[in-house]
Length: 561
Image 1 (spheres, helix red, strand yellow):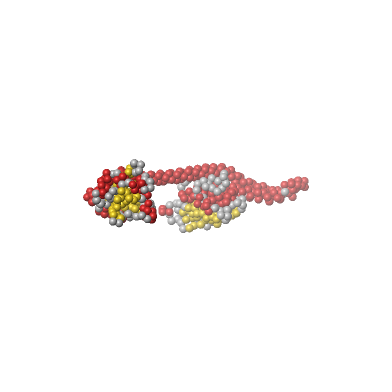
Image 2: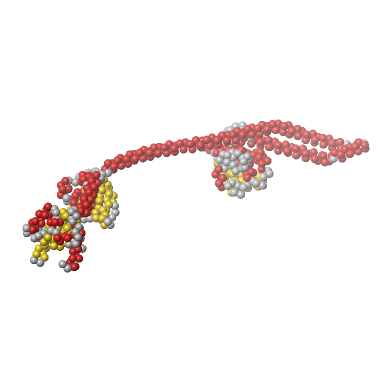
């Protein structure tokens, strides 16, 4: 044997022995065999094969070889006796080889102790895996990379109701077709079973034709980085789906009841808010009416007081006027008598005339005679003014009745001007532009209050000195009164609130905010309206428009004089 052949033989992974069949002597052995069996050098060459192979079946085999039988052994397990007396389980093969004109037996053996341990461990793992598959709560199906069924647990076959004939026939295609055909959406199920090498995990819900519902989760099976199959897990979620449906229906019914109840509550809340708003509006109107009533009663009381004062003043004014007329006649008689005495001065003696002349100079008889007439005329004129003021005060404060009567608004304006003149004369020049309007059916004392509020407000709007213009006119069956001032005007944001009760732009303590509100109410009660135009910094125009007739439907064609 050459060195190269020996080198090749010694570096083989298995034990290799050449046996001579006649004496069963070992004629050649590689280094692996010597090292594995514990022999040094060429010690094995002094042994027979039966000194190494100690299993009974091996001994019988070699006896048959000695007797001339030649039979190859492809794979067989045997027992080898080591140099230290221990035994070694090996897996071996025997083949007859020719060497020249001789026959030799080539024995190749390997230590299978580790392989057996690995096989045992693998069997244990497979047993545990099988137990795990069978004990899981899901139906498990494993398909290899070629689309064949690699494994399935009993729960899978039972939940899919696979017939025993299919299981015993091991027809994978028929089994998978049966599974797909059991699903309503067969094509999707069949597609999932074909997607073996897909690297994604999937989750599907399959409805079966018998009404059950399965949840399918699948994931790839890896060997290292390579996908070698796919694992499918099926869970019967029929009861859960039914419970979910029942819960959903219950929730929907509950939501409907909640919505219905919410709708009822909203309706009740809306009604409550509407009632609250109505009550607040009634309370507001009641407060306005109460305030206006108080203001009206206050004005009525003031009117009664003014009427009483006017009546009391009227009595002394009457007899003062009468006495002043008598006094004027008496003075005229005295002056006539004085003139007669002066005509007789020539008949008096010198001393008497001197005394009278000196007395005339002392009393300035010429001035006295000229001035006494003027004094009496001015007193008469002043008394007439007092009488007019008293009469205007009586007209302004007239509260004898609440029945509407025909009245001249221009006369009411004049009466009101006389009453509030003290408020106006220092602030503005009053310009009258009367249009000679027709009489109106009204309660004049109430309208006088409106005119008074408008005039006083116009005066208060003028900061230094300005002008107040009063106009009257007619438009169809309506009569209008307009009060314009050159004051500071009204801000745009205040225009919508000027008729609200208690709203005022005057400083605290100088206005109640009821004047315009009461005026608006009085004009409305007369069937009229108040229009306002104002420009900040230039002044305002308040226009009161009143129907001539208290009841236009039943009114006469012309007012009764």
